Image (tube, rainbow, N blue to C red; front, top):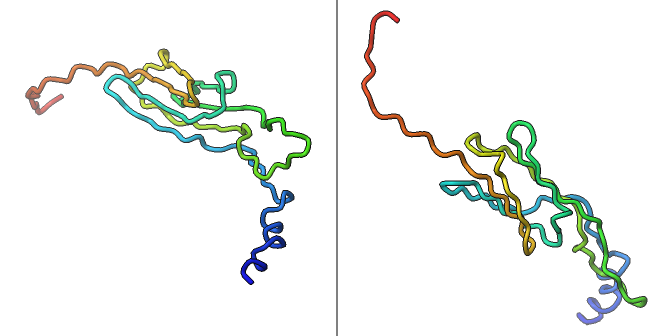
Length: 141
């Protein structure tokens, strides 16, 4: 009985090739932001994207913008094959955030390898800490 209830007619309804969902559009790429004593390091997951598909730019207000654009492509399929799920096509992503003020924006470097975009933003060297001292208090400035 259970076999006839969950058998072919219902399986075809829920898993029919006509109900195939294609994923397209933009998404937020997963990212890590690590601060070391000398730099900020951003690692962004960009599987399937090459360096020509990714644009990293610094915008006004110390805003770091990362965009990925690639054609939504499907692999070639044999003539008699049917797509059931198509989620791996390249879509678009866009991330942006404000960098801290103590960075060297002229020395930003970006590198993509094995599906991970790494952006290194060097920090300005810390200014010498002011030495403790007593400040004289006067009655007139």
